[in-house]
Amino acid sequence: MLQSLQVKNLALIRDAEVEFGPGLNILTGETGAGKSLLMGSALLAMGGKFDASLLRGGADSVYVELVFQDEEGRAAGALTEMGIEPDEDGTLILSRKCAPGKSICRINSETVTAKQLREISGFLIGIHGQHEHETLLHRERHLEILDAFIGREIAPLKEDTAELYRKVKSLREELSGESLDAEAVRREQSLAEFELREIENARLNAGEDEDLERDYRRMVNAQRIAEGLSEVHWLTGSEESTGAGESLSHALRALRSVASYDPALEGFEEELSQIDGMLSDFGRSVASYLSDLEFDQETFRETEARLDLINRLKDKYGRTIPDILDYAEGRRELLEKYAHYDEYTQTLRLELQEQEEKLKAACREVTSLRKKKAKEFSAKLREILKELNFLSVSFEVSFEAAEPGPKGADSVEFLLSTNPGEQVRPLQNVASGGELSRVMLGIKTLMAGRDGTGTLIFDEIDAGISGVTAWKVAEQLGKLSASCQIICITHLPQIAAMADTHFVIEKGTEGEQTVTRIRELSEKESIAELARLLGADEPSAEALKNARKLKERAAGAKKTA
Image (cartoon, rainbow, N blue to C red; front, side, top):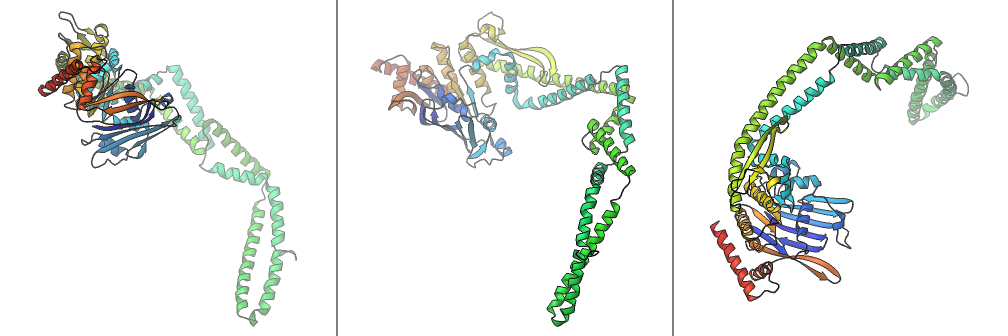
């Protein structure tokens, strides 16, 4: 159940908070007072698109918050998957702060995405906007409604169908890509053989390119390296009297000549001996490197040629040697396939045929269930439509075969007749706006409890209706509110009279600014508002009397529901 809605800085609303009750919550108000802002704020808190033009003048951000009591744990599983721990008492707070260019969404103080807000709110609340009934004019929507009515029973069948369709589609694409004639196959084979032969003849080894590049760099810079190392050897060796090695030897002899006079000098002697040994080892390593640095031009040319070959193969087949070897393996597999090309394509065709048969069987199973449940759907909806003042109504679900797809092989259309003796026809051909509104209300009533949402919001479900029909719609909303919480924006007194909790939306001024306020009405105030809705400019005694009668009639209707 939706406990409260808080809105700040949305259009004419500066700061408003509404606490809803169970059953039927009615919102009324003068035209232009901002009744639809309630719908807009709820949609925003549910992750809907933010329109910067709705930002109240002088404000830098909009804030909306919905507080739910999810005692049934409708959203608990989805919350857990998101890593959000549900509150033990079922309290669930969805909030959103929007400013031009940015949006901060939270669930129970945890930052989430707008998509996650939409996902969670989908478990808790459903909204019927002013023009939602017009979606019934779109035939593809009918299949969605029927499947939603069937619910969990059809879900695994549709999952299996979708998976089979993906397999069939993949096999078709693979087979389409293999539709080559004999000449094309020969060309592909010839190219693959050439590429594989070129790679195999190179006899590549992983890592050899790195070794070759290091050797090549050393050879190209051999003279510069030799000159530098020779100078190092001269400065650190003992061949010259000025070399570090010779100087270190002199120092070591001098230290040994005095070491016997103080034991502490023995430590110095040991350290200097180690340095002398390290310098000698360093000198030998440098000499060895200089000796190995010598190479002939043939070795240089072989290294250069080998490196050129590898780089040429890299340009054609991959950035690294492992990439080139992987490409070669792919060429081998392709040649193996082409060696048995007819058998390969025949295997694909047989597998495609098998999967298509499985898909058709799955579609037949889905169709069978849909047709069975469509009869139940139609019968129940007809009864509800009669209660909504369709005096003579026929409703059917028409099935036409379609190409097997991820949702099955059905094209579904709702057919309606509202006059005796007339054949059922598509909704768009027979239903007015007011009739479509009632059909949608009937569907919402039928779906209540099946879709798992505990709260339904109706924004002017009463469009295009009046008189007896309005009363029938009011009675239906009263019945529906017994099984779930209803929040209804209306301008009809018949519907407003059914309220368990009645709110009024008013427009006024604060200083030089226009503001919209939402407040709960007392019993006396609700009667006065009903009198206004009945057409009384001033709440005269007669108008108030009529309003009280309407309220009493509504109370009686709810008792017998």
